Length: 313
Ligand SMILES: Nc1nc2c(ncn2[C@@H]2O[C@H](COP(=O)(O)OP(=O)(O)OP(=O)(O)O)[C@@H](O)[C@H]2O)c(=O)[nH]1
Ligand SMILES: [Mg+2]
Image 1 (cartoon, protein in one colour):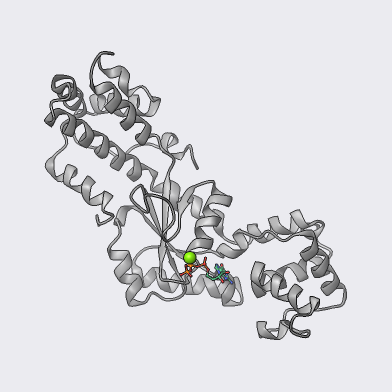
Image 2 (cartoon, rainbow, N blue to C red; image 1 turned 45 degrees about the horizontal axis):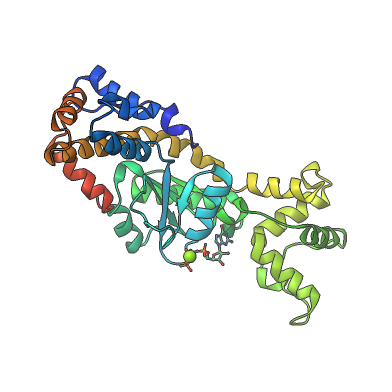
């Protein structure tokens, strides 16, 4: 996914396409500064802009408090190798965001609608998080379909908790012991918490619930009881739980938006050149590059500042 930005085609922008291609090709090759004389004061400007153009894709995870945003940000980092920031994370917050991932927990409420309309509509992916809490996966898929109809955009069911499944040998031994004793996950998850408060038994059960919750425990017990190869070791079991999380279904919609991300990065790059020209930093060189690039319209330049404020729709 890190390479997605260079691997996928860009979105058409105004101006001479072959000339425009030169600027973005140089940006992609990391050789922007070579487009001007080595003595030009534009060299450091282009070097910095080039570095920024090539930064990894940044995903900002948003949603209502408690929606599982931090867990989702972690799942995107660990499973899809993306740079992702949850609420209040990262020095620059969402200033560097390229894509927004909106986490729902059920049919959209007013706050979700408001959040969605505040985000750049061409770079949002909507997810029904905590999909494991709907009992059966099909039930989560149905709720996600309802959300899709209401929002007019596809909504993907994901269990960010299972995507982060990281059971250890102790958890695995406990699950195997439970399975061999014929234990099953009760339909009321609270009933799973048997044992005296503070007892090892209860602490073990609390730990399992916190790590993979009822659906994860149920899945693990079923795999172990069936003697499935997917439950042969704790590593295999973690992999099976992560595979059941739906997180990899996000690769496609994120990949599909990379062209738009590239487009906005090109707009941002041209805005930097316009600023340099306006400030008289090798005006001739900057204008030549902008000429090559096809000048940025005022509308686009304005959209860049809006984008940085996270307010473009
Ligand atoms: N069952 C289940 N629980 C989850 C999932 N994701 C998160 N949780 C739980 O939901 C609670 C909140 O998760 P966070 O990731 O901290 O959510 P947040 O949106 O950052 O929450 P705040 O920062 O407290 O507003 C925690 O107890 C998580 O363990 C999930 O996919 N499934
Ligand atoms: Mg949080």
